[in-house]
Image (cartoon, rainbow, N blue to C red; front, side, top):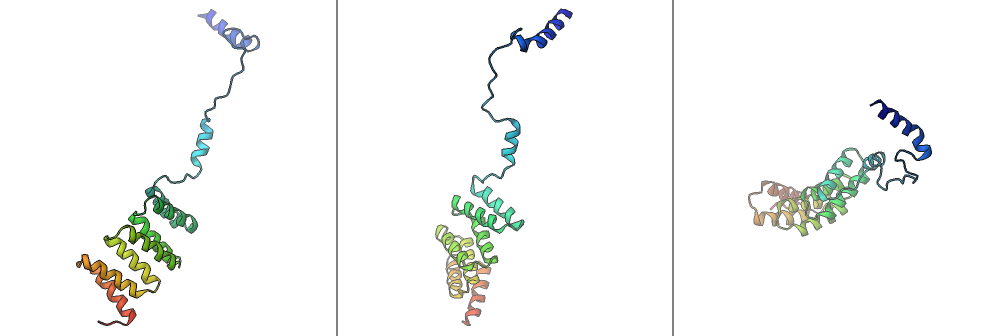
Length: 171
């Protein structure tokens, strides 16, 4: 056992200088794989979302932090990855309305409505955008369209009634 320890010590002492004890004269090549440190650095960099739901969540986070530019970009990414993503479309329209971009909100809402006809959320989103844009006639038409296939939607009656009041139509 002692002899083995002595030989190992001898190999370490002279091995690198003489290439003895199974040492190699070839230079050691660096691996092409990234080190653990560089992997950690890369993972801490912000990564672009890969699907509509993750883009939507990043938009909500950015909006909560007050980063309107990033929030807008993430909402657009979510919608581009899934044009019928209900929450992303609705929140993006309201985000645009809150930031006084009502004409853009109306365009986004109209696109959503065209992609997802027959769903109450698309009618309500379009009516919200039209109301913010001051187009009360469009609100009345949109809510009447919703009530044509879903006459139990109480909020549609209310929204249509308020729009008629603003237009001065008391029928």
